[in-house]
Image 1: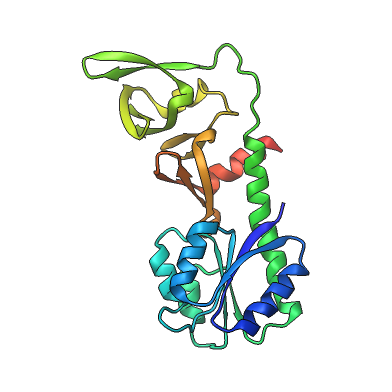
Image 2: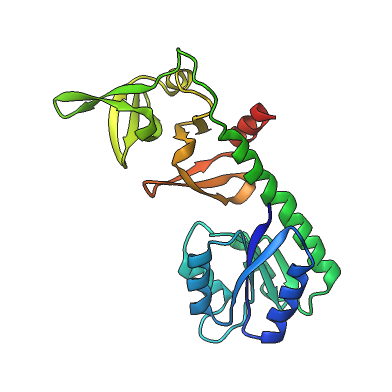
Length: 247
C-alpha cells in the first residue's frame, strides 16, 4: 500500500519540489495541495490523508493555525517544511513527525519518507490482519440480551460498537447509546470472537467493523474513530499484544 500525502505551501516552487520528491518515492502518493491555511483545512478534511507536508509561514493562517482549526487528534502525520529554524520546539510540542528545513534536499526527504512508511504502513497492515472473519465456534456469543426500559431486547453483536467497563458493570453501546449489564470485561471478552472484537485498552472492547479510521497517536498509541463518532484510544500495550497474536 502507499501513504496518501498532501502538500501545503504558499510558494509554488516549493510545492513543485515536494511533488517531484513524492513521485520518486513509491511508498507515498501525492493526492493534493493547497497554498494557504483555509484551503489547507478544507483539503485535509476532504482527502483525509495519511501525511501532511506543512509550511509554517503562510499569509492569513500559518501552519500551527491549520492544526488548531483541524482540532485534536491530529488528522495525519505532520511533517513541517519551513525556512525558519526557531519553531522546532513548538512543532514537536504538537507531536509533529518531522521538521524539514528549506531548501529540502532529496536525501533528507528520502530519510523522512522511509521513516513515515516504516511507522505508518505496518500499523495499517497489521490492523487489516485483525479483520479476518473466521468461523465463530459455538461458545462465542452471537447476541446479547440487553435492557430497554422495563423490558429487554435480544441484540445482534453486529450492532454493538463497543463495550466499556465500569467496576462490576458493562456499558454496551448500540447506535451510540449505552445499555448497562452486570459483569466484567474479562468475562465478556472470553465470549466474543477475537476476529470481530478486540480489547483496545484496560476498560474497552471495540467491534473491529465499527472502526472507520485509525489515527496515529503519541507514544505508539492509536486513536480510533468509530461509526457512532466516538473516539477511543488503542493503547500501545494492547495494540502490540493484538498484533503479536496475528503474526
